Length: 351
Image 1 (cartoon, rainbow, N blue to C red):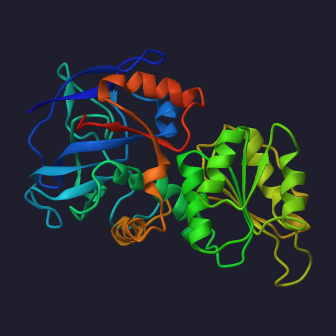
Image 2 (image 1 turned 90 degrees about the vertical axis):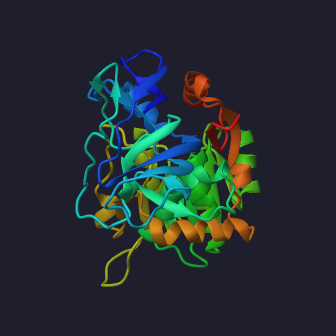
């Protein structure tokens, strides 16, 4: 079948919205007709990475309706609503990988094991999770990456508990999801750190109890002051070298002894190529530095996230702050790169 998608054809060039060819699904594949897709900063990294193969398809969080089901697929049927994500349903050891889907562009295979910047998506059934038809078909798409990444880091990687103190650097879609999860788990204080006062005010609306504008003050000193010496958990939802270096000293110090541990720093954002951290922050204070890569169990957690949305605990409505058509994907990417998007932007295929 023929469909339309945003194709990454050349590094440094705009995406091309053009026709693709989708074969019949293999036994372990499904085709999903998209209602919506999130616009994630990770795709900007892919577009600017010279190692990314072209032509390629992009996007990894979306909601749609299943239109074709491979013969071995048992958890989905035609007509089901579902979220397309990038974290596999079945647990894997190590990074894991999904091979090419079989989609072609101008008779050339396209790279990418999953994509949502296209009207019809062919991918492995491992990356498609059914959801109730009562769930909105637009805002639910951000559960597939922004929510699972930010909320999962707080709930699963850090295992935040009531009364723990939390700082989050960067309050875009992933950072706001982390802030909201910290609020749901009754952390205190929840300190949002950013360079934009409007985004910090937005973070307060979404659950932050305190804010720090890092363009006006030293964010490490400010967080330490607000948390009486350092937070239990600090999250970097940006991934720049400077922010990945700031989260460890933002955490509280420990000391000698079997249980005298310091705080934990968690890197969520796509990382820079290097960073420099004083090893004394580890040794003398028994602090921990961890990475968090999509720390969610999709089949278990997606229903919970969506239930929390319906109960008014997880505010997906206010997280989606801009909407674009597929034909406007390059404008969406430019706006995201320029820092003009508060929360999460989505592609709305129903408009």
